Length: 505
Ligand SMILES: Nc1ncnc2c1ncn2[C@@H]1O[C@H](COP(=O)(O)OP(=O)(O)OP(=O)(O)O)[C@@H](O)[C@H]1O
Ligand SMILES: [Mg+2]
Image 1 (tube, protein in one colour):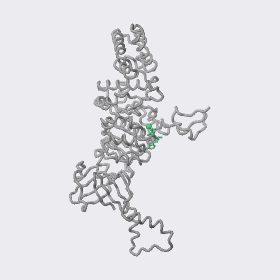
Image 2 (spheres, rainbow, N blue to C red):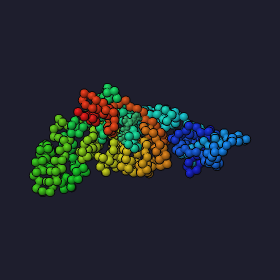
Image 3 (cartoon, rainbow, N blue to C red):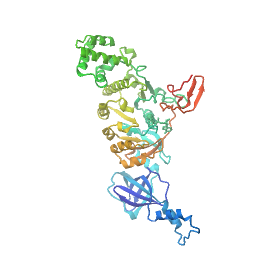
Image 4 (cartoon, rainbow, N blue to C red):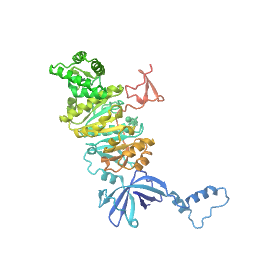
């Protein structure tokens, strides 16, 4: 049975005696029969009820076996003490209220204790409260009691999302689940894939193709992803030179002059730009530009052949029923990664300004590795207004600036044990730090605590479902089963991944 014990400083304590199998993260309702209102509360900590006398009883029992004789219990209070000993105190946070079935966040009242009844809220009821419309469902997993959880694609639309948690807990897996759900709903997605692990989402785990076959385009910079200088445009090249290559102002000014003069003659090419740079009188500027432009050309990403150009508008046009461009940044030197990302983001802004696409859902894994400092602000403000809706995925939450965290609409947290990580998240989240620390510290693998627009701000523990896709980008281990094949010895744990197959001929 559940009984209301006390409400203090926003914390509600419920006594569970005899204890029921209630877990952290579950929701209860305190129904006030005198007003037809209920408080919705969430269990965030579970302790034993420290009733006076229990310690004495435990001590007495642990010493009793040394004394010969029988336990004398004339008043038969033994079973009562056993019951009390197991009683639990559920520490809960108030999350909202129900007034005649309507959810409200008016929690400025407390229930009458003598007229209150505490009951569990069935997951089905809770999920209906959280996501009443279910118009564009994306199935992501199940509650702790195995009830199916869908999120509404509309709650991701226009939102800034953060997926965080310690290594190997299932962050990328959730990102892929949401990505595939968005594609199913007709969304256009772009992934900055730092580990090359989104490149086979269009294959089932058995190796056959799946329904995403024609909806994925993997771009490998320098291989099947090159841009013609004219397509890139002066603006993108200058911003790369300035922010990625630290080019001084006088030199960028000179580059602009060269570009404009070549453009007037319709003569922009790598060779002509080099020739013009060579003709610069000022030695310092000539040297500075030469080295930078040489580095740009050496990336193999820029070309002057329109036939080799990758035009985003064409790819997007093919994906008008939903799709994803996967930008494989795996194994690229850090500078090339930054150049490619800078180019893609500036191109994306241009295309959205020209209404080439309505919006793009951008998935950025470990963005601090390639996103320059000033872009964070840009992404959550200017680019968001243009229609770039980002999901940041990271196992280092402190790399996401506090103000980015604060502006997030949805947060998905997997297990965290590191104090600093927990503090970084607690400081910046919209729900209280106590809830975050208490629940995420004990989350099992593949389970997350999610809150924000997707849950109407009610924190919810969800076990993320499996995906029938080829997994890649997992950590490669030394001690894994090896299989001998005609090609050599293959690491079975990563045998789907053509790049991590261990070949020992
Ligand atoms: N819900 C799930 N069901 C089944 N397997 C899962 C689930 N979530 C993750 N996995 C598997 O667990 C492993 C780790 O998952 P994932 O790569 O998503 O973790 P991560 O948190 O992104 O790790 P990292 O910090 O290394 O990027 C992968 O093999 C993945 O396929
Ligand atoms: Mg990952």
